Length: 333
Image (tube, one colour):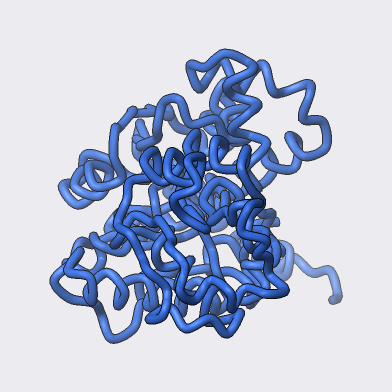
């Protein structure tokens, strides 16, 4: 372009307009962004939480408010008291949007399929290779839970007719006791109960194997719709800091495990036991077809329909795509 006074003037005007627009955008930002999270739930993003990286990058004061349930998070976001929720369970999120609450999933906080699984008793001699032998046997599983849903999906994949399996509705702790006594061929559950089950057998399918057939157990990053519409750039910045923190942890976990444990309010040993079962997917994974590029939308619908069938929620939406938006993560550099 030929340098002229006119062109210089145009460039100056454009620069001034850009600066003014940026200043206006910054002035429009809230003084505080409130994020709901869980205590005693160690996650990689707590590195950025402790180091105040969110505050610096978003240019606002970050208030982290602890909740004891994902349902309470949904209510707080719907009322406007909380702008975002970190590590909200998929089921509470699904229940909320099924009931019309104005929140949207914008990211995956943590995947922990290894912390929710079914264990086959060693005494049964059953494995993935001969899973059909579960027919006619007793299986302990808490009805109406994601564990129940996962079990049915796995059985279907392995050509096991679940109608021919004697399913017993048992809480995870009771299921662990049942497999220890030899009362059941397989038990399903999570957390400490799952660890106890593994003393008496092996998982029927690993989490990685389950993910390949579309099964997910994960928590989400959700946002109040009004906040997302008014401050989309803050949502993207939040996800960028989260993604960077996840990568930092993956590159040097031992360095940051004590930081996360302290932030979570756990001993280092207890925190590390949980972290060992957690996976923090990075941006490329999150926006791929295996996650928010399609699979999560389908999975959320399947979970919702399952819970309607088992009378856990009154109704499901025809489609959940409108409540799951990967565009914020796609803008992360």
